[in-house]
Amino acid sequence: METIEISLPQMLDARERRAHHQLELLHQYQKPLLCFTMNIAGPIKNSNLILRGFLTGVEDMKLQLKKNHAKILFEEILQDPTGNEGYFVIDFDAFALKSLTCELEDFDELGRLYDMDVLLPPESNHPFGRKIDRQEIGLSGRHCLICKRPAKECSSRRKHSIEELQTYTTDILSRILREREAKRIANFALRSLLYEVSVSPKPGLVDRFDCGSHKDMDFFTFLNSSSVLWPYFYQCVCLGQTHPKSHPLNELLPKLRIHGKQAENEMLLATDGINTHKGAIFTLGILCAAIGTQFPVDTSDVDTILESCAQITKNLIKDDYRDLTMQKATTVGQRLYLEYGITGVRGEIANGLPVVKTFGLPTLKKALDDGDGFDLAGAKTLLSILTHMVDTNMIARSDVKTAKEYQNDIRLQHKINIDLLHQLNQEFIEKNLSPGGSADLLAVCFLLYFLMH
Image (cartoon, rainbow, N blue to C red; front, side):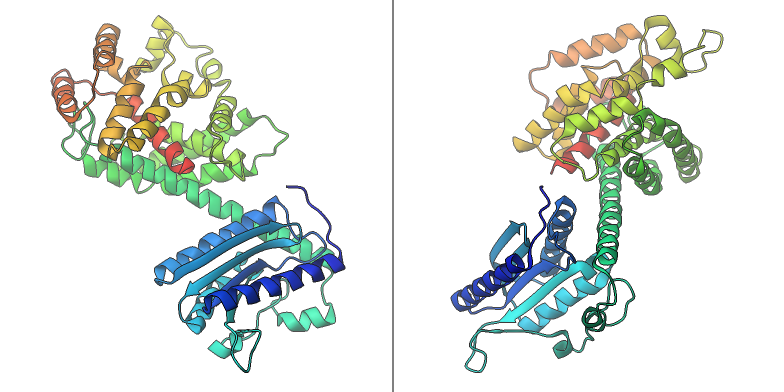
């Protein structure tokens, strides 16, 4: 959005137009009108940051109305250089509505930038309608953004410069919106873990029905583990948000790994030493950081987010396997890399998660669009991922030949349904197979889906 300095005559014209529009709506509906604008000092009344703050306010306000069963009869949003404007005709008691808007205005620093007026329809003694004051519902006037004294007092005395108010406003918008977005992404990441383990049935994996091929963990073990990982996801998003734009993204990886090791310790404490989410901590942590680097995130631009994952991990395989020999290899993944060149999830994420982009996420979206519930849609997505990547967990529990045979067999299935999933689950349990790497990428697909929707 282009930022434009607005003159005083333009602002006066905008106020007159707003008052005229308010009166039209009051006459037409004869119901309380909520008019929402932002308190923005200075000649620049709109920008991408200001608009984002305004739309956050609209979201907050609608949630407040929904919680209180207040019905919106008319809604209009205007995004002009003179400022953003929201008009909402509400079928609700006007004074109760004013109380709800004041709660939002007083809730946090961002709310102090909200200007939510509630207007009553015209009456004989108020032919142009009237605005309900805060004092009418027992509240004091609003306070100054900077010094917390009565706003009218500071305004009339011009106690603070325009530059000071602008700096403070920008700080509030940037800080609070970053914090809110980080919490939202962390919520999505945690939800994706819960959805992944809840999808049932999943061949060889822990789900709501059984423990799959795992004798040392169950559904509740995964809940215990998931419950301690939200702070880690939040930290990862914040690291991405605050990473300097001029610095290469791969500088993030060492910081993420420090937080990842701490998250693994929290997981092990919650599960009595059982590894439930080590792979997911790695993949989702990097994805959260990648999303954070895009602040304010364009939720439809999955390609850029996945490319950021690749940039964060671009030296991962080279650095991790630089001096690796068979004598030094301690994990199945390391031995598979040396023997077959299989890079597993490391290779996937370093290449921008192509199996997620090309197969997993499209499968999940199509299945849900077709009306499948999250159980069947999630299982279809899991199998789509499994058939298009080398899952080192499958090989670790069998061999390369067996893993490829199952890839081919599943790929030949024309229809994935519950009966087939139960059949595969029994076979996987009998052969001690578990597609854990694919399950981690199913969680990635869920996170991206939640972000887009």
